[in-house]
Each structure stands twice: as structure tokens, then as C-alpha cells.
Image (cartoon, rainbow, N blue to C red; front, side):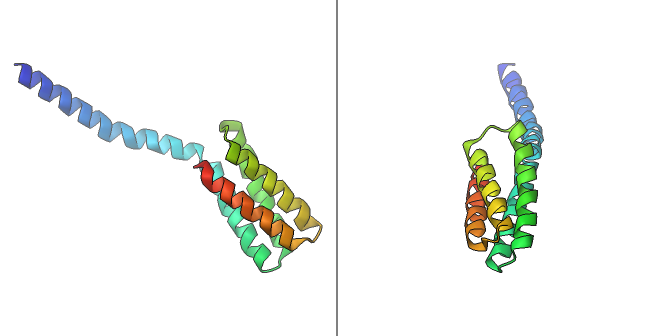
Length: 117
């Protein structure tokens, strides 16, 4: 009788783990959607900066900044905060035409945003 109860408990725990883990994993990924979007835009900003396209760099850095700031409302993370700072620098320097400095700032944002996940 005890063996049957233990086996039943083990089956229930296994089923709960197989069902619960993907469910909670999906919820965590949903929270990081803005971080993922910010990271993608920041990478695009870096690519355009390396090509010398200040206007496209600014456009993507602003998009990344928008998503990163939305992520800050849900997530407290020092890398996210540093990423936002770097994106603001990228936008500022990109608008001033300092493509090299803006690209470095966008690269820094990519590094920090990559660490948020």
C-alpha cells in the first residue's frame, strides 16, 4: 500500500513538473519581451553605426530606448539601467553626428542588455 502511494505521489510530481515548468518559463519570457526588443534594436543601431549611418543609428537607438524604459517598469536590474544610459548617450551623440561615439555607446547597450536575460 505504501509503495502505491509513493508511486502515485511521484507520478503527480512528475506531471506537475512537466506541465508547470514550461508554463512558468513562458511567463518569464513574456516579461523579457521588451528587453528582447530593446536588444534587437540596439544591435541594429550598432550595425548602422558601423556603416556610418547616423540617422538610422538614432532611429534604432530610440526604439531600443523605448523598449528598455518599458522593461524598467517591470524589471529592476542594474544592467538594464546601464543599458538605458548607454542608449541615451547613443541617441545624443548620433543626433550630434558623432557616429563613432554613438556606435560605442550602442555597443555598450548591447552588452548590458544581453546580461539582463
